[in-house]
Image (tube, rainbow, N blue to C red):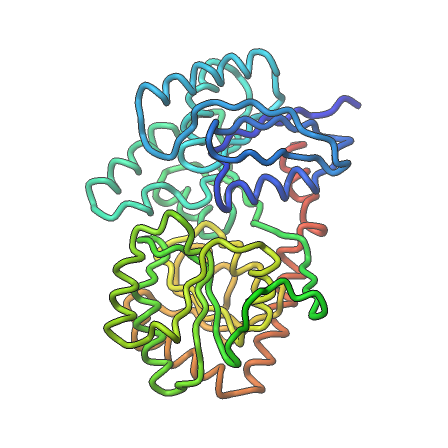
Length: 374
């Protein structure tokens, strides 16, 4: 039986890059041949298959921002790649990869799967931009395109807002490998506070870290010995000055610790030693940081948005708090877990069980293989 050739098209940054690397490392390389097309400036790390073979890569100038000339150049270059490689199907990732791939695929009969990783219009801070981005998504709702959503919420949005038919929407939820954290080989080069809660996310509109500061202020008022560690602040953190200003205003600079990019092992160690995980995001696809927290058996308190609500269930493995109620109800939820050992341990067991059942890629990769085969 000849292999099915899948051409992946993406701007390889953040969770999108993580998603693809998890697929390439776990999918059956005897059944599938994977080819990767990504940006010239996004990642310089090689992609490998399950047998540790280097995958074929093409680089084209895919960038996050809209640039008509560069985008047309990308489409033209991708058309040439498709002609050369003759893939059995194309898997496009995120807004920009999705547009480039779907536009190029107009000239072929090749089946296209499109994984939004959170639809682009959710990132718009004003109504005009939101309507424009939604219009673009609807324009590229082509007959040969099937949505391959990362969560049930994303699938529902594809049908109800973008207008895809239910038969053209499938789901493969984000999954990761099980996480093993060794207490003997601690990768951290600094000392952690005795009590702390954790989160991952750069200060930005999406992650809504300003709301996280307000929530933590209320928690710290009741439990002054509790700290918060925010990881992944990174180089592109547009709201970092606003967050720092709030921390200074509330005298929380020593309690709310912001860390830049650190290794995956360090992130796992910090989450593992934290008392619980929180998220105040305005929108998500299906966040890897929350999945990692489930894999590490952590209770979670999260905002009610796509992705978060797919991973955390109220009173089962944590609490899901409405966006408009976060400032008041999220501190109460956090304090409830921190002060109730029995409840905390129950949530932790349920988180680990949910990971094992739904988000362990070793057990779920065959679901994606089946989607590709059909």
